[in-house]
Structure formats: C-alpha cells, structure tokens
Length: 168
Ligand SMILES: CC(C)(COP(=O)(O)OP(=O)(O)OC[C@H]1O[C@@H](n2cnc3c(N)ncnc32)[C@H](O)[C@@H]1OP(=O)(O)O)[C@@H](O)C(=O)NCCC(=O)NCCS
Image (cartoon, rainbow, N blue to C red; front, side):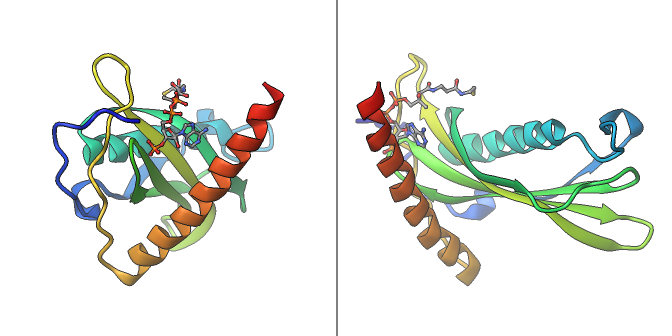
C-alpha cells in the first residue's frame, strides 16, 4: 500500500505532456547499418517519460517496466526524431506513460512512425517507499481511449507478475 502523496489533486495531461520534442540525428548516433542506434531512442524515451511521470506525481519516479517496444521502422541519417509523451492513467503509486516516436525528414516535411511504447513508473518518497500519485483526468476522446486501454494493459501486467511469483 502506497503512502499518501503531499499533492493529491487530480491533474490533466496539460500539466505533464511533452509534444514533438526534437532530437537531431548526427553520424555518431548511427549503427553499422547507418540507421539510428535503438538504445539511443530507448534512453531518450525513458528520460522524457520520467519527466512526465515526475511532473504528474510531484515525486521522484523510477521505471518499473516497459511493454510493447517494437521498432516498426528504422530512423536514418538526416532524420530528426520527434518524441510525444503523455500520461495514460494513474493508479496507486504507479502511472502508465505512453511514448510515440516519429522520424521526420525535415527537408521533405514527411514523417514516419518509428515506435510506440508504454512505460510504467512508480513514485517514491524521500525514504524510497512507494507514494500515492494524483488521479489523472482524461479530457479528449483520444485520452479517454488511452485511459481505457491502459487499464487492460495493467491487468495483463499484474497477471503476468502474479504468475511469475511461482518461479521465485
Ligand atoms: C518499481 C518498484 C519500486 C516496485 O516495488 P514493489 O515493492 O514491487 O512495489 P509494490 O509491489 O508495492 O508495487 C508498487 C506499484 O508498482 C507497480 N509495479 C510493481 N512492479 C511492476 C512492474 N514490473 N510493472 C508495472 N508495475 C509494477 C505495482 O502495480 C504498484 O502499483 P500501484 O501502487 O499503482 O498499485 C521496485 O520494483 C523497484 O525499485 N524496482 C527497480 C526500479 C529501478 O531501479 N528502475 C530503473 C532505474 S530508474
């Protein structure tokens, strides 16, 4: 059971979201195939997602898990990465943060979807104990869809976690 947070007022996405954060690709970001090193994109996504979690919760947050990380297309030399990050749902001490990454060809003005993933962050107090986070209030239809699907993913995560306890 999480301790009670000092700021427990419900918040909307506007309080935390990050839209189209730009990262310009340079040659030292590429792998041997001249596409962008995937670990760079994962690291950037985690760094931005923790900011969204910390803005929402007002607490230090740690990454508990990441689901459904699939690179659906490569990012290439001369692309610019665009990261859009927002909270989907908050529970007791945990929050699901969705990340979408697009690769923009800035010369042509075209965009390709590279990856979408869902991070779960847990808020901790100064003693490192889990602490409750404010409720998230979805406003738009898209946010309401994400809010509903986040609950389905949480149930799946909890079920897997429960099953795996047998093997500890
Ligand atoms: C994340 C962590 C704090 C959870 O601790 P715990 O003792 O398992 O906590 P609890 O069982 O009380 O669960 C606390 C919350 O975390 C959630 N949680 C725990 N493990 C999870 C997982 N693998 N995936 C998603 N959520 C998880 C629980 O559902 C619960 O959420 P709720 O309060 O909203 O209901 C702990 O596992 C940890 O410190 N992990 C290492 C984190 C880390 O070092 N990350 C990388 C660097 S930032």
